[in-house]
Amino acid sequence: MRVCVTGATGRMGDAVRAGATERGWDVLPVSRTAEDARSPADLASVLADERPDALVDFTVPESSVEAVAACAEAGVPAVVGTTGFDDAETEALHEASEAVPVLHAPNFARGVATLAALVEEASETLVGYDVELTETHHRGKRDAPSGTANRLLDAVESPRAARGDDTERVHGREGEHLRGEREVGVHVRRAGDIRGEHEVLFAGNDEVLTLTHRAESRGVFAAGALDAAAWLAGREAGWYDFSEVLHDDA
Ligand SMILES: NC(=O)C1=CN([C@@H]2O[C@H](COP(=O)(O)OP(=O)(O)OC[C@H]3O[C@@H](n4cnc5c(N)ncnc54)[C@H](OP(=O)(O)O)[C@@H]3O)[C@@H](O)[C@H]2O)C=CC1
Ligand SMILES: O=C(O)C1=N[C@H](C(=O)O)C[C@H](O)C1
Image (cartoon, rainbow, N blue to C red; front, side, top):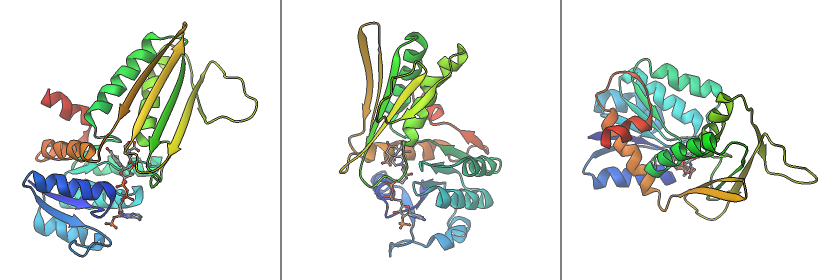
């Protein structure tokens, strides 16, 4: 496999480079700052000349959108791990997927895919329970709540919506405020170099259920993204989900 890695000096870019090298893959790093990498301004020619099997991007939304557009132009599959996209940026990624395969996941840890399924099941079964979500990440994280938190909130909300119960996301609380029945509390913590923790708590019926995932290294995200890149290479243009990679592996 030959993989192009954008944001090569970033926390995740570095982990992806290391993981790909460990697999014996050929790595084409792209970075605004690294001396051993090509500049993002040269991305189109890197893709056209070097013909990587896939591009893996963990950067910032505006740069991811540009990278995926370059992939669409060059016919290179794109794996995107960046979070914090607004609607227009998400739409731009979907547009690119008309030309090339694109796989975006807010979390490439395998356990998080299972967590999302468990959260959806709990939300379906534990009708009327209060739900509170807490996510904790390193001090350098830009977006809040995390992309994973938003995905888990969708998993809480979809069974509620299916039975006609709407939900109000309440971000932190202060002052006098009695909890409403429709509320789902969302709590964000930023500290140190915590790799990523997500906890969803269900409380009611004199019992508490907590479902928690904790990433213990960035290697876990990098490995999932590289598995996705290998899976995506050579596929038809389209929008793919990480769960498809996991189901094929199972
Ligand atoms: N899906 C998943 O499993 C995971 C997703 N993430 C997401 O990946 C993204 C990156 O996270 P992380 O690696 O911690 O972030 P970092 O800030 O460490 O790295 C981002 C890199 O992007 C590059 N970059 C390109 N354009 C810009 C710009 N305009 N401003 C700043 N940086 C830019 C820089 O690399 P350079 O200077 O080399 O060009 C930078 O180092 C985040 O959105 C995060 O939420 C993180 C972990 C797991
Ligand atoms: O920025 C991070 O570090 C992480 N971001 C992702 C997110 O926003 O969900 C995934 C992971 O939790 C680490």
